Image 1: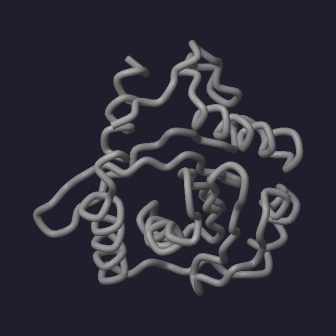
Image 2 (image 1 turned 90 degrees about the vertical axis):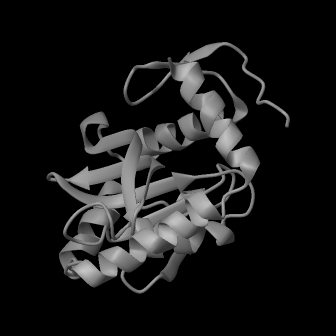
Length: 188
């Protein structure tokens, strides 16, 4: 398996942490820059590199979430980065939006850093394509004001966890797991 090329270290734009400088991390930082400069979010509104615990029956794992944008403390938009095809990431990302609290995170963005699909979470409807379609703070505030946030019932959460586990753990590529291990080791 090919290991990612590490060019050194870079400073995360949101957290200020030192990270391994890889092609993937450079693309994540471009997304972070867009959120801060073009979309108008503050650093305090964005959490990055979260590990979301997933329980599917007796199986447990943690799934990475690249960015979670909150407005007034309420999760409003999540962004999942992954190289390659973004269409294949819709279903697990929409399921993950049901596992971050009592309400569905209303907007999901899946991106490979060059392309992006913006989805309305409760219906899974595509509402925009391209990096420029990532909602600005004002657009996200307007969407939240116009649409009530759907509550996740226990059965929905259980099914969502199984979908995320199937796509991200059981069905994940061995290379993905290897790259995650390398990324985790580089952070230490």
